Image (cartoon, rainbow, N blue to C red; front, side, top):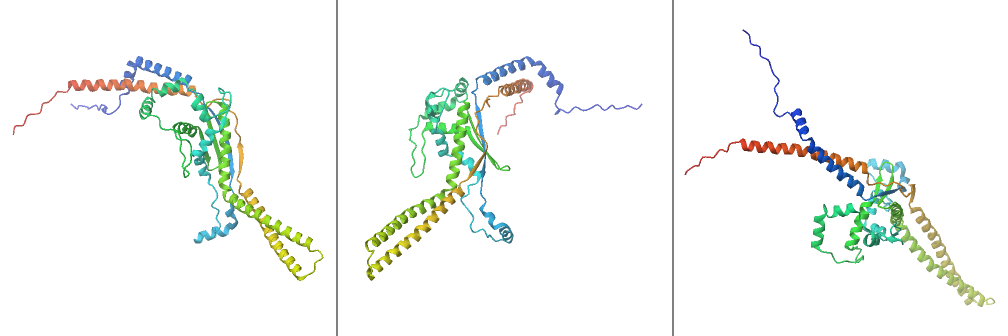
Length: 379
């Protein structure tokens, strides 16, 4: 008789038994539902009591001059051969990659902080520093977060104690801030940002605060400050040159007017005098006048050129999207918060069920495993 062997599929121990997993979840469905409800309630509370936040932005396109294009194709061909013909390369151009660093710099943030704005709960315009230190009242959710998750930081700050307040002063170009100023500076650092689009070549300055009008005011102030900082850097060299030429022009203008007056006075006093001494003196005064006039004339031309240079170097910002007061708030997104907390509750519930089963399995195996005593070795 021939025995037929029936090959039964082998079940790998490492494979996951989906039916057993589904059965485990089904048995623990009450626990899962309870955890989901708890997390949904937490998510609903977070969504309802989270602080409102509005967002305002402005889009700018900086016009950057390219003065090195005069060399044209000649410099490109020379570069291939390994030579650099661009001997007059301008170094005063500020790269747009540096603009975000300007917005995040302490002097920029201090100017934003000390500018007066209008608030809905304050009668007169006040600065951000005055508002956050005297008038601002955090919401209930912020207080709960501070004394729950942030409780260790509150305790450490209390143990450390309050640092001595140092006024904002500059010693050898070093800025010193008080603890309150640094805290508000960090708020500005988080809520006022600048993004650069390398491909399209535009800048987006964004401001985020709890009031719509305040958000627009800070965004407009940030735009004006950014343009001012970039303009000051760009025309710094030309402005210094203009000041120098203007100073020399005023000096030589005084010398020219003095020489002109001396010559006129001498001619008035010696109208009918024909002596050689008088003619010599007149020639001398005439030469002084001529020299003073030529120097004055040249400086006048240089002064006008310096003024034109300042105008040429002043960068132009095309504001593509001006600042507008936002109508709808950007945060909190209540539906998204509720979905996230519900998903998190599902993950915690499933993890709780499987974790509990895993611990129970380990506990059962621990009890069933016999304890083997090691033989004592006598020396």
